[in-house]
Image (cartoon, rainbow, N blue to C red):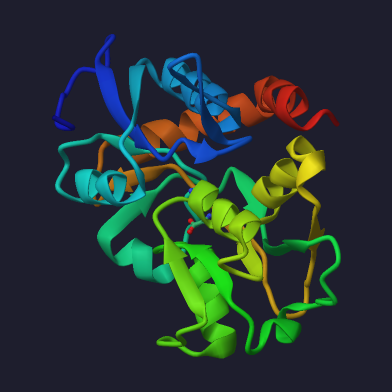
Length: 232
Ligand code: GLN
């Protein structure tokens, strides 16, 4: 469905994983968030409409790969491994992994997680960076289908910590003051990553989206959307 030739008002099918606030989350049955606003602006600029569905992470990746979905938008980090199977737009957001632990935890950096149970979202950079530190088949790294489920595991005491993207970690802690959790950052053991819009390999959308994204960055739209979701 991604091989329409005229841009016109073609509607692009978009997959996402909507438990990733503030980038994408469900509200009254609809997907909302920073990514939703940004993708709407970019697609509009490029002459497309979008139909965003909460497919989940794995189905989004599979769908964009086999082109049954035109676009994936879910705070997807651009990395070399993914670039073998996908194209990405230009980077649109800088992120870094962050640790979430209980308020009373003595953990002060990622190395302190040695021997502790770490919850990650399966197939994400949280898993990759945890495995880089503690080994690929480490039994203490517990993989969940969504980051929301990893946070639930922390609340239940099934894990001692969650490793996820900093903005998502911060949002979770801010929105859950009753849950007695805190964030720990570690710019030594984690490194910067950049989100891109996920596209099928060789997609004609790549150049159109890059041009549109640059426009949205230049004309103040990006700043407006950023302010709406991050307040600065
Ligand atoms: N940015 C992380 C990654 O791409 C997490 C994305 C997500 O969970 N939606 O792996």
